[in-house]
Amino acid sequence: MDLRCFIAIELSESLKKNIDARTKSLRETDADVKWVPWENLHLTMKFLGKTPEKLVPDIKERLLKAVSPHEKFHIRFYGAGVFPDIRRPRVVWIGILDSDRLIRLQQDIEASMVALGYDTESRPYTPHLTIGRLRSPKGKDALLRELEKFKEVGFDDMEVRSVSVMKSELKPTGARYFRLCDIPLGHP
Image (cartoon, rainbow, N blue to C red; front, side, top):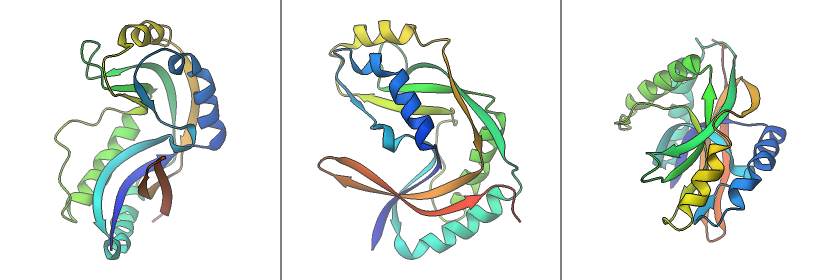
Protein backbone atom coordinates (compact mmCIF):
# COMPACT_ATOMS: atom_id res chain seq x y z
CA MET A 1 0.00 0.00 0.00
CA ASP A 2 1.23 3.51 -0.81
CA LEU A 3 1.34 6.29 1.75
CA ARG A 4 1.65 10.05 1.22
CA CYS A 5 4.76 10.92 3.25
CA PHE A 6 7.04 13.78 4.17
CA ILE A 7 9.92 14.39 6.57
CA ALA A 8 9.41 17.18 9.07
CA ILE A 9 10.43 18.84 12.28
CA GLU A 10 7.45 18.82 14.57
CA LEU A 11 6.61 21.85 16.73
CA SER A 12 5.37 21.66 20.30
CA GLU A 13 1.66 22.20 20.87
CA SER A 14 2.36 25.37 22.88
CA LEU A 15 4.53 26.83 20.10
CA LYS A 16 1.87 26.07 17.48
CA LYS A 17 -0.88 27.64 19.59
CA ASN A 18 1.26 30.72 20.26
CA ILE A 19 1.98 31.23 16.55
CA ASP A 20 -1.69 30.73 15.74
CA ALA A 21 -2.78 33.28 18.35
CA ARG A 22 -0.19 35.86 17.32
CA THR A 23 -1.13 35.63 13.62
CA LYS A 24 -4.89 35.86 14.16
CA SER A 25 -5.05 39.30 12.51
CA LEU A 26 -3.82 37.78 9.25
CA ARG A 27 -6.68 35.29 9.22
CA GLU A 28 -9.13 38.12 9.94
CA THR A 29 -8.35 39.83 6.63
CA ASP A 30 -10.72 39.12 3.73
CA ALA A 31 -7.95 37.33 1.82
CA ASP A 32 -8.83 34.09 0.08
CA VAL A 33 -6.29 31.98 1.96
CA LYS A 34 -6.45 28.37 3.07
CA TRP A 35 -4.86 28.70 6.50
CA VAL A 36 -2.94 25.80 7.96
CA PRO A 37 -4.76 24.64 11.11
CA TRP A 38 -2.54 25.22 14.16
CA GLU A 39 -2.38 21.50 14.90
CA ASN A 40 -0.82 20.86 11.45
CA LEU A 41 2.00 23.43 11.71
CA HIS A 42 5.40 21.82 11.08
CA LEU A 43 8.68 22.48 9.27
CA THR A 44 8.84 20.40 6.11
CA MET A 45 12.33 19.12 5.45
CA LYS A 46 11.53 16.90 2.46
CA PHE A 47 8.25 16.04 0.73
CA LEU A 48 8.35 12.41 -0.35
CA GLY A 49 4.86 12.03 -1.79
CA LYS A 50 3.67 8.59 -2.85
CA THR A 51 5.70 6.12 -0.78
CA PRO A 52 5.33 2.34 -0.62
CA GLU A 53 4.65 1.40 3.01
CA LYS A 54 7.36 -1.28 2.83
CA LEU A 55 9.94 1.49 2.13
CA VAL A 56 9.38 3.22 5.51
CA PRO A 57 12.00 1.10 7.37
CA ASP A 58 14.58 1.98 4.70
CA ILE A 59 13.68 5.67 4.98
CA LYS A 60 14.13 5.45 8.74
CA GLU A 61 17.49 3.70 8.37
CA ARG A 62 18.76 6.31 5.89
CA LEU A 63 17.56 9.14 8.11
CA LEU A 64 19.31 7.66 11.14
CA LYS A 65 22.60 7.85 9.25
CA ALA A 66 21.85 11.33 7.88
CA VAL A 67 20.82 13.01 11.13
CA SER A 68 23.05 11.26 13.68
CA PRO A 69 26.03 13.61 13.02
CA HIS A 70 23.82 16.62 13.78
CA GLU A 71 23.62 17.79 17.38
CA LYS A 72 20.53 19.50 18.80
CA PHE A 73 20.28 23.20 17.93
CA HIS A 74 18.02 26.22 18.33
CA ILE A 75 16.09 28.15 15.73
CA ARG A 76 14.01 31.31 16.11
CA PHE A 77 10.81 32.14 14.28
CA TYR A 78 10.99 35.74 13.10
CA GLY A 79 9.16 37.89 10.58
CA ALA A 80 6.58 36.93 7.97
CA GLY A 81 6.10 37.25 4.25
CA VAL A 82 4.92 35.57 1.07
CA PHE A 83 6.36 33.38 -1.68
CA PRO A 84 7.20 33.88 -4.46
CA ASP A 85 6.75 37.68 -4.15
CA ILE A 86 4.17 40.35 -3.29
CA ARG A 87 2.97 40.64 -6.91
CA ARG A 88 2.09 36.94 -7.06
CA PRO A 89 1.77 35.68 -3.48
CA ARG A 90 0.96 32.00 -3.14
CA VAL A 91 2.34 31.02 0.28
CA VAL A 92 2.18 32.94 3.57
CA TRP A 93 5.12 32.09 5.83
CA ILE A 94 6.92 32.86 9.06
CA GLY A 95 10.68 33.14 8.73
CA ILE A 96 13.42 31.36 10.63
CA LEU A 97 16.57 32.98 12.00
CA ASP A 98 19.78 31.13 12.85
CA SER A 99 19.02 28.65 10.10
CA ASP A 100 22.50 27.57 8.91
CA ARG A 101 22.35 24.32 10.88
CA LEU A 102 18.77 23.75 9.72
CA ILE A 103 19.88 24.14 6.09
CA ARG A 104 22.76 21.67 6.57
CA LEU A 105 20.36 19.18 8.19
CA GLN A 106 17.93 19.54 5.29
CA GLN A 107 20.73 19.01 2.75
CA ASP A 108 21.76 15.78 4.47
CA ILE A 109 18.14 14.60 4.58
CA GLU A 110 17.74 15.45 0.89
CA ALA A 111 20.87 13.49 -0.05
CA SER A 112 19.77 10.48 2.00
CA MET A 113 16.41 10.32 0.21
CA VAL A 114 17.94 10.69 -3.27
CA ALA A 115 19.82 7.46 -2.51
CA LEU A 116 16.38 5.80 -2.17
CA GLY A 117 15.24 7.10 -5.56
CA TYR A 118 13.44 10.29 -4.54
CA ASP A 119 13.97 13.31 -6.77
CA THR A 120 16.20 16.16 -5.67
CA GLU A 121 14.29 19.37 -5.00
CA SER A 122 15.05 21.79 -7.84
CA ARG A 123 14.81 24.93 -5.68
CA PRO A 124 17.22 25.70 -2.86
CA TYR A 125 15.79 25.10 0.60
CA THR A 126 14.47 28.31 2.18
CA PRO A 127 13.74 27.72 5.88
CA HIS A 128 10.20 28.87 6.68
CA LEU A 129 7.00 27.83 8.39
CA THR A 130 4.04 27.78 5.99
CA ILE A 131 0.94 29.18 7.66
CA GLY A 132 -1.32 29.64 4.62
CA ARG A 133 -1.76 29.26 0.87
CA LEU A 134 -3.55 31.81 -1.29
CA ARG A 135 -6.36 30.37 -3.39
CA SER A 136 -7.01 33.55 -5.38
CA PRO A 137 -5.98 37.24 -5.43
CA LYS A 138 -9.15 38.20 -3.51
CA GLY A 139 -8.19 40.30 -0.47
CA LYS A 140 -4.49 40.12 -1.32
CA ASP A 141 -3.86 43.82 -0.64
CA ALA A 142 -5.41 43.69 2.84
CA LEU A 143 -3.34 40.61 3.64
CA LEU A 144 -0.12 42.24 2.43
CA ARG A 145 -0.83 45.38 4.52
CA GLU A 146 -1.34 43.25 7.61
CA LEU A 147 1.78 41.21 6.85
CA GLU A 148 3.84 44.42 6.90
CA LYS A 149 3.21 44.55 10.65
CA PHE A 150 4.98 41.18 11.01
CA LYS A 151 8.18 41.97 9.09
CA GLU A 152 10.22 42.40 12.25
CA VAL A 153 8.17 40.49 14.79
CA GLY A 154 9.92 37.84 16.83
CA PHE A 155 7.95 34.74 17.64
CA ASP A 156 9.26 31.90 19.79
CA ASP A 157 12.40 29.87 19.48
CA MET A 158 12.68 26.11 19.74
CA GLU A 159 15.28 23.43 20.09
CA VAL A 160 15.45 21.05 17.14
CA ARG A 161 15.92 17.60 18.67
CA SER A 162 14.62 15.21 16.03
CA VAL A 163 13.05 14.75 12.63
CA SER A 164 9.93 12.73 11.93
CA VAL A 165 8.64 10.71 9.04
CA MET A 166 5.03 11.77 8.67
CA LYS A 167 2.05 10.29 6.86
CA SER A 168 -0.52 12.67 5.40
CA GLU A 169 -4.12 11.60 4.88
CA LEU A 170 -6.18 13.93 2.73
CA LYS A 171 -9.78 14.21 3.97
CA PRO A 172 -12.67 16.42 2.84
CA THR A 173 -12.16 18.38 6.07
CA GLY A 174 -8.44 18.84 5.34
CA ALA A 175 -5.18 16.97 5.79
CA ARG A 176 -4.43 14.93 8.90
CA TYR A 177 -0.85 14.11 9.82
CA PHE A 178 0.43 11.05 11.64
CA ARG A 179 3.98 10.38 12.83
CA LEU A 180 5.36 7.09 11.51
CA CYS A 181 8.70 7.40 13.30
CA ASP A 182 10.86 9.95 15.08
CA ILE A 183 14.62 10.06 14.65
CA PRO A 184 16.64 11.96 17.29
CA LEU A 185 19.59 14.13 16.33
CA GLY A 186 23.05 13.34 17.64
CA HIS A 187 22.66 9.60 18.20
CA PRO A 188 24.95 7.17 16.36
